[in-house]
Image 1 (cartoon, rainbow, N blue to C red):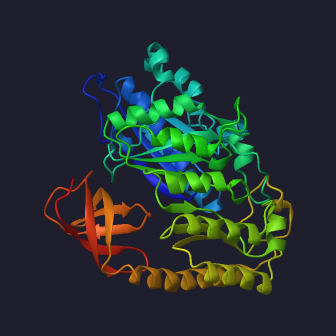
Image 2: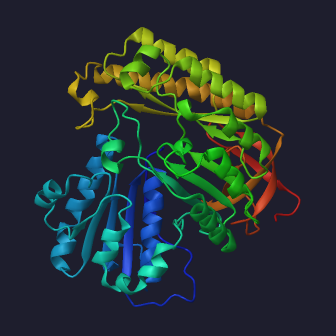
Length: 451
């Protein structure tokens, strides 16, 4: 999953909800699962009468949702917490809350380091948060079935939604802290997930992404033998849903049944995010990824056979301990031959508590930077070439943002599309003829009437 900073600012507040005069501010960094957790917290507070504000200075409760996948993310969280010391001193009645992966098993240390924080609660531990907010105590029954509303400053909340379907991770990749912070895999029941999607669609959501640290492991811990393919078919049956996606997948669990469901279902989008992390089997073995490069390649090839025109994204870590120049060259070769649409690349950094943190971080920083640049440059050229082939094509775009005079949206294949048009396009679907391309996005013009 990608890492980014997001400020929760709901654009959707049902008129039936009370306004108790109190305000909340949520700042989120990390993956889409963190965003979904923040959206859930926002929905809970809104149900209790709180409303969002765009500044910590006007908030009665400030929530920071943290990430520790990389040191830079953790440093940003610490910086935000330290910056709030003065605000807390000036307004001692303001509640300051920290959640996310930085918190798990670290409450005592964090309390000593940040004594001005009023509550630390583990990711997705909504019961602890509910107990902390007095206004939530009378809404216990309602909150049990409250959807994970997706809210964002840049997008219309009625367009897209993230729906978590499985929490935690059973894999123990040698570089990853997530299993230690989010625990073992716990699947949500199918009926609960379908009900939530129905609820969201009734409120105008048209694009749903099912989330999990290992999303295609869904169902293995539930009674029966249902898997992700079965869940996709069930969610596809929700009337009014137009687009369905899922992430993040593990190559080991990407069975033919899932790919065939993607190919068969009308709502399933022609986009696959399948992390490979490295293009060399020895590196993958040290990473404890439990698959080979050949398996990953096979899954991509099978998906493309079933879905011509499929777009594919992956994740890469460069500079993993012990990675040689030859092993890194294997990664470049695999990516070049696969011709993917997008590659998320990160330089390895040791995370305390993981297996690889015990090893020598023996790839020099300048070598890591050089490899990072090499992957980005190669992918720049590949993406540029792939997007140029789309020139003149017509794609269906769902618009979810407006920035700097341009409407933004994504195709079913997850290609970012920008359009300059005087009509209000937010939340609408339109056919777009591509007139200009870049490696990162395409430009186009609306064909016919938006719908």
